[in-house]
Length: 297
Image 1 (cartoon, rainbow, N blue to C red):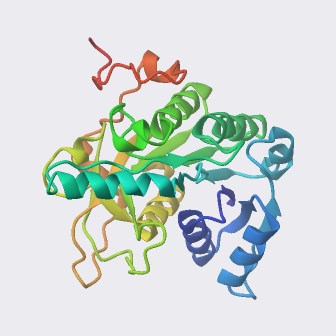
Image 2: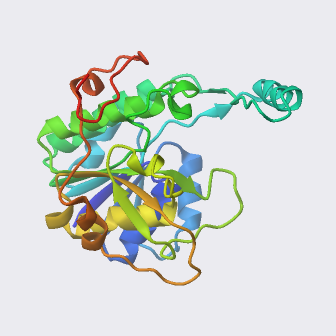
Image 3: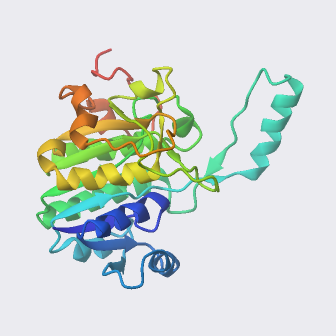
């Protein structure tokens, strides 16, 4: 199997590359800059046979050659929000003057040309088109929870990032390509957090349409390493994963190995998948979108 991983320079993408290599899978890692290329090369064993190439998901012409000759791909690209530091003052004042009863969220922005619409929708669409043109046999797409929640912080404060991701998912589903779509919850460790969150030590949970966010069981976070492991398992067991779209969360760190097979992870779903609506597929930036997972009023 020959697999191309996009977004390989990120925290999660680099873990996907490492786990593919551990399984002896021929891997091409796609990064956007020389800085990311050098960083990934330093993270990997110098003797590891991995092809690291430069390509930009916002430039389809650079993507097409990368997908030629591949059997499958794992899409782990995402726009990166930047904290608007001036908004922190309002967060602090709201907490002080309301004695903590009112909380205010900080604001974020995206670098020019790196907005969710451009990266998470148009960029992923370009990757899906490249995969289809090259005849790939399997596309694994790492998305995010909150795709059915327009009022969630990720959407209201981050330019509808997950709604744009959801639109790309709809495009993949309708493309005719064999796919697996994974919606992780909050990724551990969080960006900038030095506290480790090793994989393989938590019970994993699968659900659909953001139900893990509302179950009151605190299962809406998951280690990045576990996400990477599920991506690789999906490629290795296509009979279980193709045509599946599901949320992925976890329980607390048990401090010891907790190995769960892909079959056991998906079995509680009893074949159910994320429900995609016409409104999600036609999303154009409006926050007014139906939230019912079955698409009814």
